[in-house]
Image 1 (cartoon, rainbow, N blue to C red):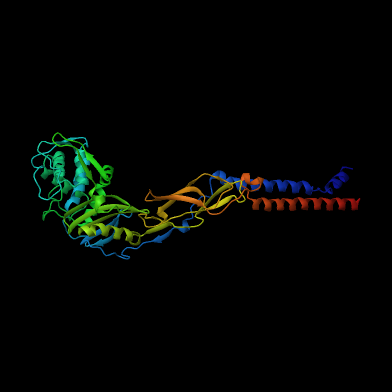
Image 2: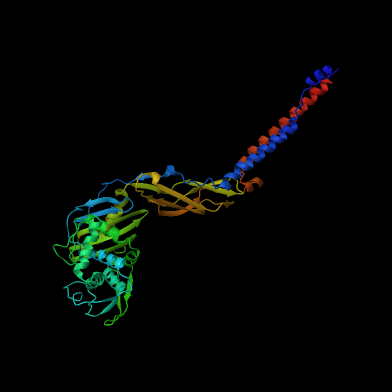
Length: 442
């Protein structure tokens, strides 16, 4: 009897409820659709800048411009090397651009509030040069004398400052020369603090670029170099003195200048050293043996050619779809983002991999209009920010259906809805078929 029961049990078939299976599968698909749509939003994905848009530009020696200066150099501080040279190793007189080293050493070695007393040596008359006309025994704050040396190129101010640092002008000049030797400037020799003409006082465009780079690493000196107007307080012997910036006058308000100093002996014997920034490019220009007219025009010529001469990368232009971001309650769950404007980056390894672009934005909610400002981007090279700009919506995004509140696009909703309907219909058909077969057997 038990044997017969076992045989009957083994012949029993498992009946599948296709309707229940279809509903379970439909629910699983619905959950997956929501999870796969919402999870990337929760993880912050979908906002990566399209690196394929970063393209090379610039070439050393390309389109070398013609300038008046007898010797010149454009030194890329981004790449830490020259990108343009003209007689860059020819020894020439620097004139008053010498003062940047004097002021740098003062700011590095002397408290700015130190009271400096002018000596008879500092007050000696130098014909035709710019002077504060200090008197022996006149007391001034060190910082005020630095402003006078940088802005109006006061020769007596530099001598008084040098003596305050080292005890004598001679010893201070020795400090100047020993400092630049440490920087590798072997074709430069100074004999005074202010650049007064002397055949033993010389430099080269190459050396002066290095000196400029080191000196203007001092933030206070950078600030002073671009100060438009300054009033020196009254001293124990003189009243207040208003001064204006000679560098800004000489460069005729060139945009992007970040620091610098002028020098001259006559209208046909002029010099200048300056730093500039333009669309992510940072460089130093040194001009020696220039004219007063050339000193105004030559920097503009070199700045205009800078991007052609410097190997680097164009990061933004008027590119479409540089990245995308999420849109809540939209017909689409993402909107492509565009940029406007030309920006460059110059990584030291001269590879696109040395450029990082970070985006910053809030998650949007529909409706979104094309051209609407929706975020910002930041460009980094050599671990420093070299540019930034805004991101704009690349298309209109209207409000979507109810599932779009969970970042499920209308298209996904439609596809998933049709798929679920087909599965449920198939389950119903299979159940009806099985029911019909069972009825026929009975």
